Image (cartoon, rainbow, N blue to C red; front, side):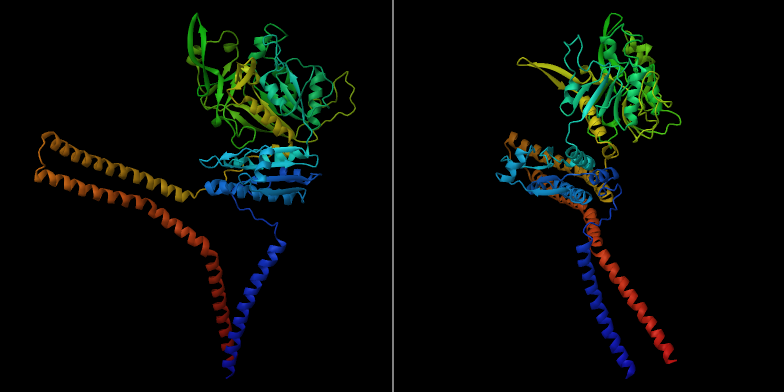
Length: 629
């Protein structure tokens, strides 16, 4: 009797325990929803859903509210699922920005339906619509930001193809709104960026392009201080004294960012300043900057330029009195394969055109880190400057060219701790009490071993239309310079950001199976279609003979036609079977994945609970048996 009551009590306790477990599970979920709304666990390989330290530092330092307005047409996601996935990614990242900023970044969402006030607002704020259907309905997917002084910054269209740089673009937008003043770029160097006597002193196209985003301020040499510029652009400075070198050095020690174009042979300067100065024109920047480059832990190899058999541009030249057309090894046309696709400076660049570029190398024992942005192909080698300075022969260069297999660095990002190139203080004759022996922030330098890429001849064509002169880009040299300055302007918050991988992550096993099945299907399909074509040709030939002779088909001929048609029907059935087989294995795997995804966790929990219950029951029986004994 007692054992029966104990058994009944255990059953009641078991039921009560199950009920309490369910109630506890529900209560825990409600508590988590109420208190853990900001908790996230990012298990992706490239940490796509985790803000970088630079972004977090920027958001923590915002001292005014910033409003972000996301315009996304839901119809776009329904028409193209890739946009729907990207929109969810954008929304999640914007929410992360709002949380990390402690509410100083506020996010609003709008669905700009056709002819709605939201669409009017999207158009007024500069967003670009894309056609959604044949009727011309426009869809929008862009972001507009504003600050407390009504400054606006816009991402006109958030293309999924730019997903790897999504955090960079959002952080740049927030940085621009938090720092709305137009940054001043000080331009120091001998490149004729403001024109020369050869072009009527017309500003170079790159100067005009940079001027659309920054305030461009020429810096005359010599200069004592660079306190009035935010960024420094060194454009082949060949005539520097210690005063100017010291001013550059202290600008960097104070945390200033530098974009430097340092060329072993600047052809544009050689063309416009032939016979002027103590050096061969176009070759003086490396010796002029050597003390600073040494302090920054890098070198540009002097007296040599990079020739590339893969990237060489084809030119027409006069060689020994005759016209030749050949690849000119020192003039390079560089595409995405030569760029760092993960860096925001080069990630969107499609073509750079360089002329007589040098090679950048890290100094032994340097404390800084050199990260290549642009490199040659492996079919490259160094060419002595003497071979191209005076009347170069493209055919002779090709005949003597011996690739080394090395990919030479043509542009690089240089970061890390640096000390002054003037460890003993200001040079003699310069009175400066605020000398800095070490940099207040890590070096923020983008170094390019070519200055001719800034010249119009390298990347634009001038065209006259209705009495006006237009510069038509044929390469992305200007975009590269603007990207670099924009990146450097953001300091550490932008310089440390890199691409986070692609937003779309296909199932590799499924894709592999699909490709193999596709190959098998296509091969079998072609065999079947070829046989069907043969049968149709046979039938047409018999019918043509009938028409030409004016005679009725014989029984044998009619039988051939009937047999051929039967075989065609059988072949078409076989073709459908092959097509079904194409999907069968993939569909089976997808079903298993879906089944595991839905039921794996609940089944695991249930099996664990059953196992635990059986184990407890076994222990209880053992205890009861021991008590009776």
